[in-house]
Image (cartoon, rainbow, N blue to C red):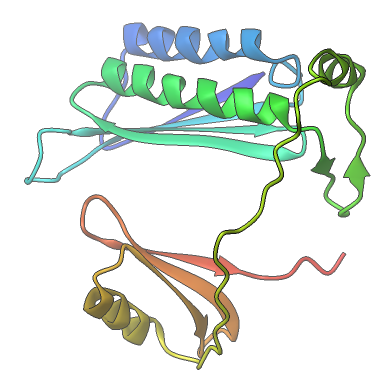
Length: 193
């Protein structure tokens, strides 16, 4: 794994850096794919200025593993607590990542299950497979709207996020409300490769 640590609004001391590196480095024991040398780990530690809470630190860990991205973000009262909480979230996500039997590469082609996954699948072959189905499906016709309208609509509905077709960029977007009561925007484009 290759690590990069980014600080915003604070300066980490060597003890804190070592603590973070040790905890995140331990994640490689959960999966060989995570321990791959091509895996890049970006750790962002930020000092918050939220007056409504005593959680003054944001710890965000993003792992760029083969064919996927695993990410955890937590707000905490200390850097060590934030690191521990983020690592716990990542452990669960790594387990899910390991259990996936079908993955797609960047071109959209299916990647076959590994030998280890095939062996484990044979061991639990007696168990009936769970069929994933949606219990409810809804269809909508999207009218183009501006970002401000989307935020207003989201607030009117009392939701934490709102999907819309952006009239300015002519792309699909999701507006969402962050824990610090600011807004975020996810902008989706198509990969035409």
